Length: 96
Image 1 (cartoon, rainbow, N blue to C red):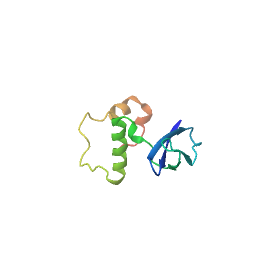
Image 2 (cartoon, one colour; image 1 turned 45 degrees about the horizontal axis):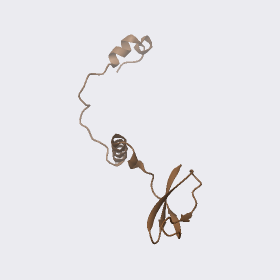
Image 3 (spheres, one colour; image 1 turned 180 degrees about the horizontal axis):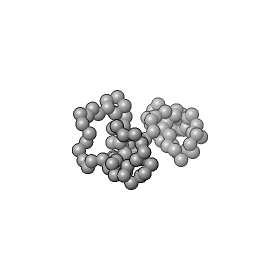
Image 4 (tube, one colour; image 1 turned 135 degrees about the vertical axis):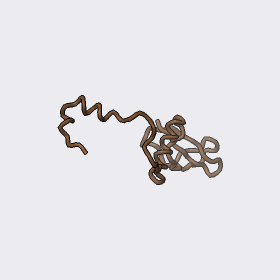
């Protein structure tokens, strides 16, 4: 079931639940019974967890304003050399 938003001219917005794709263009206002037209809105993305919202916002922001770095992040050194030693197929690859 999806929640759809309808707006009555006299009483403002009201919500109604219908199966996805089966919502009518108008419903009766629960307060006065007049016609309330369907209003198209963005999905309720804010109802998720704070971590998920932060990830979505950071991902959207990075498309226009990517982070600029001067060096790789500090941390343990890469284990690429150990992978080459363990896998004989990688040892035949050309080296820089």
